[in-house]
Image 1: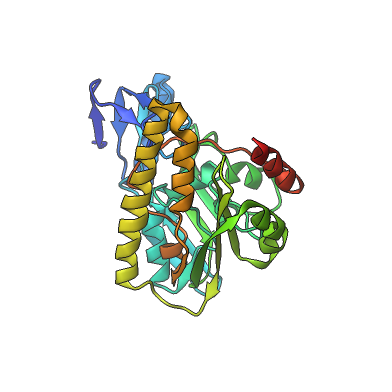
Image 2: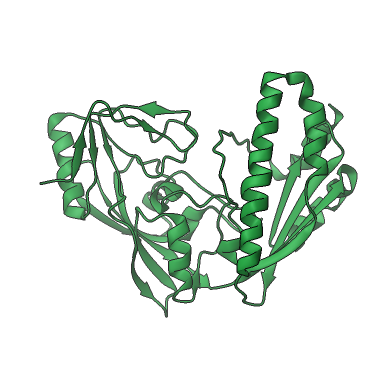
Length: 329
């Protein structure tokens, strides 16, 4: 008997809560064979099937129509190949679970994003990325995929320079249900992060040099103010983040900053004329300081407030002119 929930009253929503759905059936397979049966059943009955993952996409890409499939029961580290520095995971494993599992065997993701709530399958399939000019998206770290196609057949593919590898890298679920992935890893490493408030012109002039010299460079620009938060990260001798530093991060970044910005955003939404004042308050509150720890303790940021965002891609050569034009307003 397949693990399913049949209910027209169960509502699914994505992480940020801006997309909702009421699929007829929720499937919770625990084996590849069960995934095959579910896919085959939907094909025969002409029902659509959507893998919902963690629902972290702000778009409706994971919105289920007829039936929904969760890989929640297919999580964990399956195997490691230390000589090849490769690790195989169930595709439903959350990133916040995967990184510590890799660390326990001395391995690490080459890079991670600011948020770690996604499943590996979802992060790979939607092009999730981190910062750092030397690194590609998380999907670039995948060396092999196992998935169940639309006919219920199990497929395997090892990365090479071919069209299928390119399609699997950011598939948006179009090729089937991803069930296992093998990741190319690196030895476990630590990072030191440095936060600084800088005047806009200074930050802009230093940007092109910093971009190449720092492992990670992030800008947090506050329109209407002259302040930029410049965040840099570089490798440091292997060290775990102290529990006191973790606790302070949770309070400062997870509660004070995140919730504080949420409150200010709501105030501006209700009274737009407060925008400039709130921006200046936010810019002046950005802390200076440093901290160190394992990469997966430093790269992701606690998120106690859920939000909706969009991203725009700007050609690298146009970044500075684009920022100058924005700053004029």
